[in-house]
Length: 334
Image 1 (cartoon, helix red, strand yellow):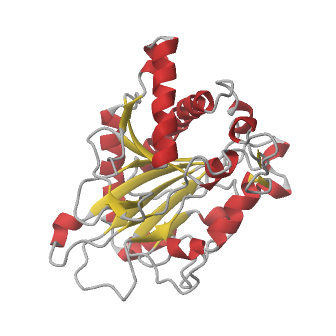
Image 2 (cartoon, helix red, strand yellow; image 1 turned 90 degrees about the horizontal axis):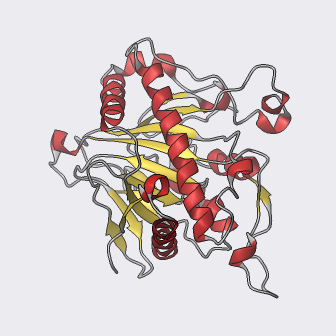
């Protein structure tokens, strides 16, 4: 198979209609073949990305005792810190005995808006909660919120391109994503001083749950692999300044599985890699409004054809998937 493509999306803001059509066509091809693409020309400054990595590394450099002050156990929405092995993404695929992932995580999500009943309804309970922010680093909250805002804007641009690729109006997704239940997460993969237990990976094989995932990571030993149409695992090598973008389950359902929500994993580094294998991944999981109905869009189904998936609300799908990822060592409240 060919490599996952790098697509420059700057034409969406400064190109002709023909340029936009060409970009949308490239996205359609990547989503069909891979469910993954690398995105350049996205407009998010390198300074913000660098600051995000700096402040997040400073948090994970704290002692375990200090990080445990922000432990997610019992917090609404599972906000906060998950220690090494506390989550198992392979469990979301039905492998109930999968070992915990060899990573630690800091998890944030969308917060409620006071006085707006939309954020107080029963369907909102699991998805909107106040985030917990460490006192050290003191600039973590400000930096993360700036990065979240930029990621939400980029997701909107990408979904407009996706709409055009699907022969829908450019604004087709807008009413479904104006109160998203997206999450911003950091995964820290420490060096492995001893071999992990049998079957344990940095992140077990899984698909993502929402619409789009925006990943910024580092080119270190023990990285991301995706399952190709050939049934083989393929390495994705980060491109400096580019986001790795992949589709989640909801986009696959929306497109009647024409576009792929692709199985992927993060493998262990080679033995003896030491500190060179330390890796940080900043991940924005875009997910639409909790009451958005995920059902097959008209352009992806032929006359007389039946949808492959029944309709489901975005919030219900996300809740079901997240509840499966507990490794057995701790559970996210919600």
